[in-house]
Amino acid sequence: MSSMRELAWPLALAALYAAARLAGVKWLTAAAALALGCWLVYRPSEWAAEGMESLGLALGFSSYTAGVLSSLASNLPEIVMSSRAAYTGVVKGVPQMVDLAVLSILSAIGFNMMLLGAVIVLSTRGRRSIPTPPEALAHELELMRFSIVAMLLISALGAVSSIPPGGALKMLPREAAALLVASYIAYVVFMLREGREGHGAEGKELRHSIALAAAGFAGIAAGSELIVDTVEGFLHLEEVAGVSPVVLGGVVIGGLGSIPEHMIAIVQASKGALSFSLGNLVSGLTQSLLLILGGIGVFIPIALDEYVVFQLMVAAGSLWFLKRSMVDDGKLDLYEGVMVLLVQLLVFSLLLRGHL
Figure (cartoon, rainbow, N blue to C red):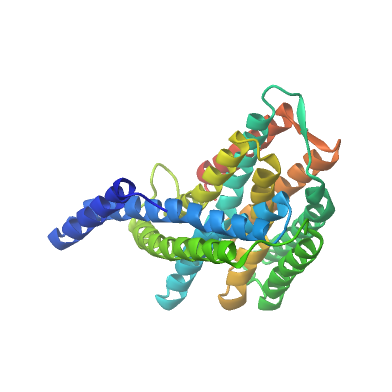
């Protein structure tokens, strides 16, 4: 998995973190924890994604379907960090941490959309356009439609709570959150049932894939713990350059949680594995909304305040924009890739500088 030279970097960071913590140097402790957490989130995520991809191919699934399975692994840091932040908010009685958890999920969608635009731009070098993978048209579009409608309905519930002024703050019903999760499970079941292309591999290859994925999951859990503990300190800061600490923390966790998916998708796209890369990214968008956000909402009350409602509406608009790009002519071109990038830059500028 890793050579001793590669392991020297995290070992050095771990030693620095331990020394800084013993010496009581808070800023150095935070910096070392964040750096070590990033390595533990990034590198083991590659192992987990590689293990899940190999597992999917070994079981005879298509490249696109294997990309979706890989996306489940590469989204694990996002799942662990957002769940950890939400749990901390409930246990410690800090509602801002629950807001931060939800914002991190929705911010990760924005980062993934930006990366999708970058992958489209990268993949259209030397050619006019790239065809939309048939699997995406067969299953992903239905899930996108469901996600768009669901996010708009939840946003409407949050918006009407402020009419008339002084209305009670609405919470995401747990039954609705459970239905979000159920919709994604239904998608995975139908996709796996129809995504088989051949026979599976031998038991030895399957065991190797499972071991690789398990090692990755363990590293991700440790790294996520370090990152969330560090970012929790942001909530004690005053607004930084006009940006709310809750928004800043959510964007930071969302960005760090999506690093593995970014790297995997870019590497695969540069190798020409476009179906895998698109499967990883497109599936990651609906995973964040339905599986991760819904999963947290089943166990932890999510307040539909101005931060959450704004980001849900943004997510619905972004998914609609992507869906139209995929179906208008059955292909993706350079212009559409650039526009996907620009619309997400607009989203982040509104979130960070809009003073919600």
